[in-house]
Length: 76
Image 1: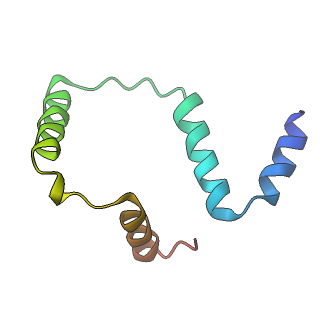
Image 2: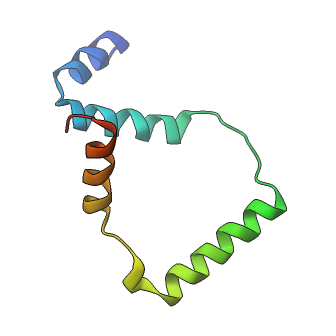
């Protein structure tokens, strides 16, 4: 499949699906090589441990996603 064909296919996708796909591509191939600092790593580990200790505080992804779209006026 050529780049042109891929772009044409992307344009036919519903916008939410297209945005999700673009995010996946960015995560996979974005090339960002920003290393985390030891402080950032420690904070992420602390938050992960807290989330595991208190799963009832979590918000389902679907709920969070809908709230974000509503807050920032993005059409789904």
